[in-house]
Length: 207
Length: 129
Ligand SMILES: Nc1ncnc2c1ncn2[C@@H]1O[C@H](COP(=O)(O)OP(=O)(O)OP(=O)(O)O)[C@@H](O)[C@H]1O
Ligand SMILES: [Mg+2]
Image (tube, rainbow over the protein chains, first blue to last red):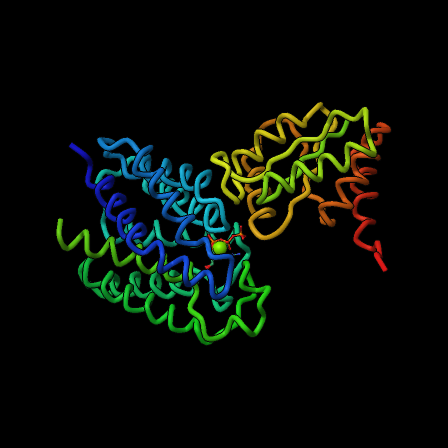
């Protein structure tokens, strides 16, 4: 039987696949029209390469990161690859996930993305969805909200983050070549990051 | 011998630059390519860059030239992944075509890594018209 963490990643892979054309179209506007293709190729490989019965969440996420690293192809490869590997380090040996674990893993993932991409919030990247989502998740759980309630609030913030990326110009990644012409378009990476969080939320509610 | 790795999203670009550089440094055997993805797609793959750096390493260091965006990010990641292996690899902040050619000429005459980098970096100031 496949593990819960495998099933969750598999759900993420399916959502990325369903949104492949959407993500690629977003990247066509302000990049090189490959974000959906890149992510779908990467998560297809994750489904194939991650052992289905492994229950160690940390080990599964590390393998996920390594796989994304060498199969995605664009900047999102080293970025998401690092994010999953860093989250995996935090969750090494765990077979279940508390809200505190999730918060710590998300923070480590963000720190990894920032180290790799040298970006801050406000540069029109995936960080504009992930950072506010993480802050909200951590704050909500500290207030005593349930895991899923906190994640629900975090997803709402991530979506606001996407909206925010429409209003700013890109200063990192391909889109930065467009200068002010990047304004008015939402960031593909912020979109895939939000889809990921929303899929985790849906998975937790249903399983 | 200092080794050289050419990192590009496109295998054709990497191979083409290698051909150009090889013309000017015919007996030099330290040039390696990390172009595109394993399946032939356009993109960059840190693990392929790690392999190319290992092939290019002959004990005197490896200089790496990248094209743009993740060409540099993946090369940085590759170098981080080589931590612990006794390979001195550095990314050179220079135009990939001119930089690689100058580095190949310099490396082919047996210059040390610092000198190869120094000469390659000068190509940033080359004017074409
Ligand atoms: N330096 C960075 N820091 C954080 N996120 C980044 C950075 N650069 C790009 N991104 C994110 O990656 C997304 C683009 O991913 P994609 O897979 O399309 O890579 P790409 O830009 O085509 O890569 P390449 O550099 O190879 O052209 C952007 O929408 C952005 O969210
Ligand atoms: Mg792209």
